[in-house]
Length: 104
Image (cartoon, rainbow, N blue to C red):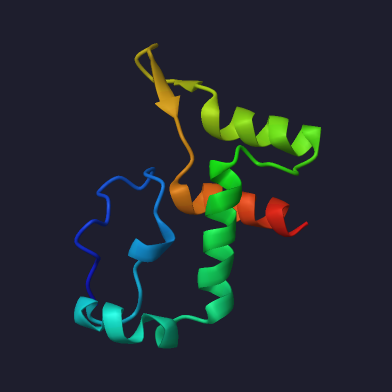
């Protein structure tokens, strides 16, 4: 199993649906990616990406406000030394929340 050459190092980076991890060697990506993942998964990831890129067009005002607050606002957490550190959701968490709202 290998990662796409453009796969980001950060777990927070927004992933393009075309550079996802999949359960095979990277050489197979061009020939058999569609056979390794259910088509629904790849199609849904593309649709959610387009929806995210559009600013969540069609979401209810409450859902859009929550999505923007969760993923675009700065959130600071207190540290043991009294300082503050930024909090951010991992991309997989963000995509899961976006997908549930998109499907609803």
